[in-house]
Image (tube, rainbow, N blue to C red):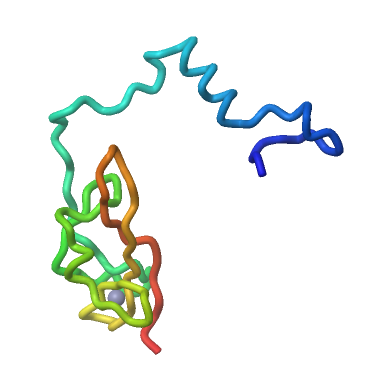
Length: 115
Ligand SMILES: [Zn+2]
């Protein structure tokens, strides 16, 4: 259940990993501070995630790997899976929604070649 717990056979002695993280944050509040608001976001053209293709898609992604705008609305959907088809190799660049900084963002998380 708790990741990082190495105790075996005695669950009562196990400290959940999350509690340890909270204690560390309390004692060092400035460590690993998040990026300043208003920071200029670097945007790159979205490229096909196939290493052998590298085709250009008509979308942009930030240097954090998130797409600009709510592009999930433009994704094709087959059997509940959403993706952008690559215009070059026709493979599927799989996308999903993730929570990041209190906002729902869209990212490409995988690739499937054309069948
Ligand atoms: Zn491609």
